[in-house]
Amino acid sequence: MNTTEESTIGVGRLLMDATACPQDIAYPIGLKILNDSREKTEQIIDEIYDNQVHNFSKPRTYRKKARKQYLQTAQKKVKTQKAIRK
Image 1: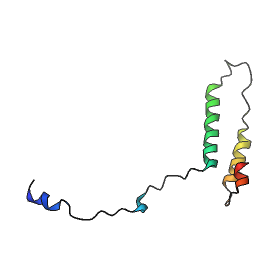
Image 2: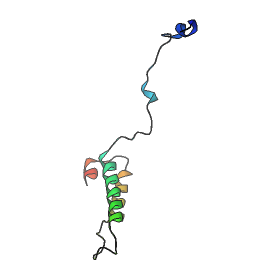
Image 3: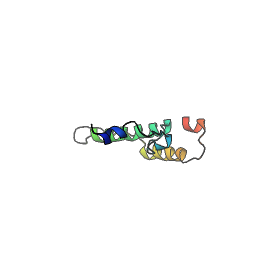
Image 4: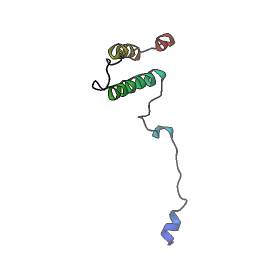
């Protein structure tokens, strides 16, 4: 090492701060996890079901009803435990 590199080693101070955390990390709440799993289940049903292979109608999933109920609860400012559980 030359003298310029040796003089810069160990000089200064490292500051750690919690404000440098990434902001795109969502706090996992049960309601969001439940909705994500519902959407993925619907995708799996769509991929697996084939009219040509199956001789019965596609299983009912009540997609519109489930999404409407989720949005009604998710958009509330204050979510009660009773509403989340329902």
